[in-house]
Image (cartoon, rainbow, N blue to C red; front, side, top):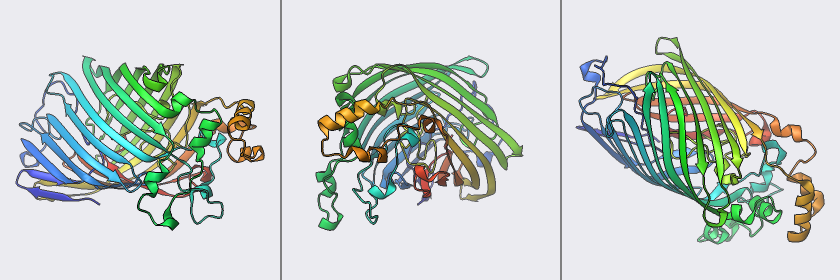
Length: 468
């Protein structure tokens, strides 16, 4: 699933997202690498976009990335990057994106712009509060005796994102950060007619309510929240960064704290909210540049207002690098656990891994290495959604009279609130292929430690870059 083509000064490669990584040094320093190892000037790549995500399926499309390495004084980092991608997956998730990244357009500042449209016809929806919502994997598996629909744990979600982020140096390794942007969400039940179009009768989805439809009928999702809306935002915070580089980091720390204020317009216009994020990344060299111990601790808290569930599922970042960060569960937070399996108002997570460099080699002018990284991930709910059993029962009687109330325990566990706060663990092994100390193809295999997070099944993710 990885392709490299080198023709003169042109290089092309496959990716599923932006690979930008610009170090925030004050002045370009003389490179320590041999002259033959340094890339200069412009490089341009265009290739099919190929990736795989257990939650989204096989991705196919086209991408183009333009790098300006200038005189090579900043190598392996670059002066400017322009990134374009249009792709789709076999599970009907789309990706249409432009991103620009530079620390030279505005000297002394790191600037990043992102415009993305991300339609998702089968977006995962597993309910609220992690283990408080029962996951019945057989309901979505056609060969199971308990099969209801392949789309039972799905909804439709379209996301348009326009974002701009910038930082500047305060002093030493401390930086201020600011951002402006807007998110537009369209949330709806799965469009069964569209999914069934052109399919054979035996492969068509049945017209039955999924979990999302039930949450609407049961009053857990408000009508406005269930349909999405426009959410302009403003962001500000501080960060500390003394890493030696952003990709393939060998040593250093990176910590940040910031607040994001979201306003609400459209049907969900009352959803004004203030969200706090904090993260800490630490990279410890164990043996030369061959073995590195790396870990990340992060938390997102809904501190004021009433954020809709889809904004709580959107994991905020100071600078957008991967296409979309979603918490908790999935290839960007807790690998091996189902995407959105841990949905709550506030949560924390941790990633711990060893990074081994196995071998290095050159192909033409390009420099490569292969690495392995065993890892363990953990997710934890800090503030759950309030699920009032009596209110839900009353709404079922009123809006879903055909539902048997004796079956409610198959969906939500009301009498074990401690279960909500139980950590979710997963672990696995990653394979990395890096080019020019910058471009990283990542293949991660992961499995949950508790079968309630994915029936104990392993997941595979083919993405760009290290997860952190």
